[in-house]
Length: 532
Image (tube, rainbow, N blue to C red):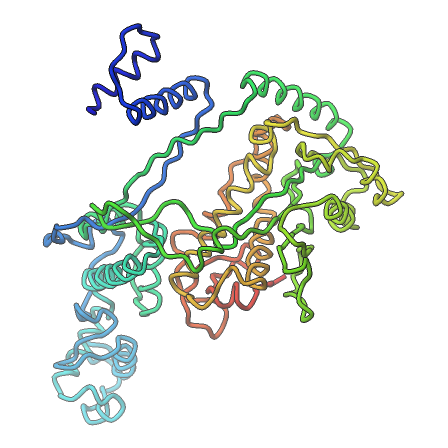
């Protein structure tokens, strides 16, 4: 069936035309699907989700004229080897740049290149200390380096980095790993850091774009239409949302912003991946590798609390699914900011809700007078049960968000959980590529990751980001100050350097917002970095 004929049939249905195109059963079903999509779009009940995959362009050769220095911030320098940018050619030898610099410093310490001051050491003297200075003419090379400076040839170095990056990308695509432009940037900077290339280079967006084009790596956009239609009129949901916001705003006048909280539970899958990846251009199917298919379905529940002043509660509630609903006798990894409970499923129950109130809401560091905003889950309505665990010295008023409205007016849904999950996805993808023996689905590893992410999200520098969720939901009217997202702060463009936990030489993958150090995966996650 041609696209024009298909469109004609859709047009006839939408306009109630008496004239109908003759369709078979399969064609009729296709037309009805398209009509439903268009009508849901018209009713503003359709969301468009876009994802990007990176792929190779099949049957095309690499661009022979590609210059890796294009769109980079690099500058030309002298005189290192094209195939080994951290090595300097002395005669027929390749010598580490740092070692050559030591020879230059030693030779120059006896006088400058114009032979002013003390006499320079003889070739025999220099050769004994630096055996790669095999001939007397090599002393002139040292003098030239002293006069002009010894540094890596950036053109050669970046060309080498480009080649190494392609090797790594090819490997990850063959392994079915999920890749994004952010990962390409991280890998390029890791190559620079691991090989001690002392160059001024930043894998900018434009450099990555040129590199992908030259190596026939493309970003393919996939568009999905996801129906969010509810069996309630959209106008009714809008009206209920507005009424709820106005009611909460009137109540907030009796509280400080740091006494107004939102609590919500969210299910996180144990192996969380993004819906986009890099792939070879022209590939019809993109397959990715996961550690375990069952881990894509296995979930745990987190329930944080955020206040209207941009802060998180000190503790976050976590429910893990465990055999028989119990943890093993050896116990679990101890974290400083999680309340972890075991149950036969990861779903919350009324009993778990009461433990959440006891351990998190009524934590000694929480306000004594609170306004708590929650969704329409039935257990929240049991005020008598909640009252039974509330200390006498505490005051608590709970407001329920109407069904169907949480996506519009629940702060955690509006602006917090998205970044939370995105950071975990980045960590999972990095672990899959660089630490294949580290499994996020393992209980203790799961706790390390969510504890560390929650801790970073709780940093004071992110208060304006949290306030934005309350502002977007309509509860506060003062626009937050300018802020950067947690993802951008934790994983900036230049994050891939040398780990700053001494004496580690691994490449860093994250910046700790508390100590501001760039830290490798091993020291941040596996060793559970807790600098405070």
